[in-house]
Length: 494
Image (tube, rainbow, N blue to C red; front, side, top):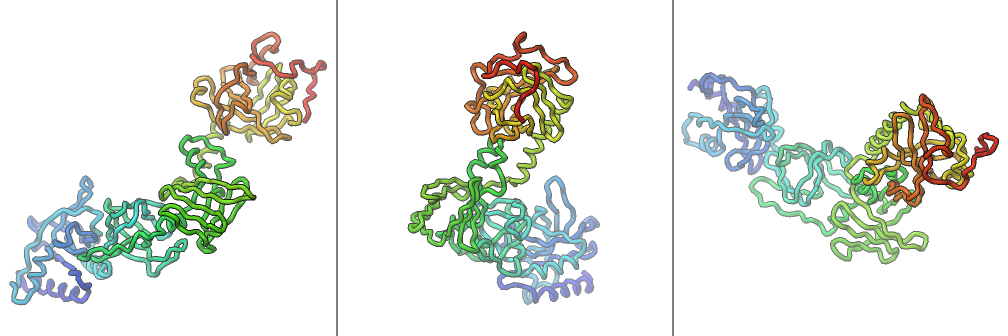
């Protein structure tokens, strides 16, 4: 071994001798210009070990000489000097020869790669502060987020007791919905790297026995303050994929306000706000304010029941945590409905005609003009309704109806508050509408058709109109006003 090579290793050892942390030995394995590489192999780079599988064998912060990498196993093959051999080589009276290098495979997520040895050494010095720092999750579903922000994307959910490698920390503590702690940059057991808030982490150093900082008595309540809660009906709509967009809205929910120590409830009916300062735990999952009657009961970390007084009545509301982005769900549903209408418009855009029940003109913006609908008033269309309005596709079919119909249309006439709903089926010649009374609706779902349904057929504009109902079976039901105006004019009120 040349004196120049030996001098380089000595210089490296001297460089790193002052950067060690108490209890942490920063191990450096330096491979010089092929002298220690068998068969003339050339390194592909140098790595800093971020999270060793066995800290007794090799410290975090050790330098690895990367010889190859595999996309199949997602790993590096590297050379290094084990901690014990390096320590022995550095003791007084030991042989001056450098201990032989060991070769081993390392998962990629455990290593940070650099092009040059100098860059790896520089990073190793910076990493020294956290080389021996680890964390343990105190609760299930603690999120790792993409950014140092509680509203950032959640990329991983921790298990209670899951161990993490800390690789960095926010410069200062922050207040997140009333909870104060640092944000930690961490690596999870599957290699996911991101940021997690430290309030529910136990931080410890390598070689230490973690001291639990406690899953606090108020853990559920603290979790409650960090979440946005949605009505339970949101979860039901997501599960069934049947959305009432009048009720499924990002403005609705239960919103904790830690700054003012209050909770804000927003529904279609209005806004209620309550102070939670007086809430006291009566059990691990139940909190009551004896003075105001406000009651909070948890069914886990993502579901709760809230009870409160509103205008003299006792209200019980259930809320859940929704992972989906509400606005994105609404956009997808609106797009789905628009695509269905556009398909119908391609067939019916030139108008639809029924000699017995008038003509319907559809517009691309989903507005309609329905003239000559006297026979449908008032049993189907209210007398106060105009002839214009908008078509909605916010109705859904019960599974038993899906083989008979293509969908449901709701006509929202100007002048009235209620919609008139029809099941529809598209044929080659036109559109068949079957009236659905309110009694056959369960929310936004059509549950069944009447025993004697009113069925209307409208021919598309490029097809001949159907014969009058008197000479055909166009209508299988009856309405209260069965005779059209004798003059043949459309006297339907606007």
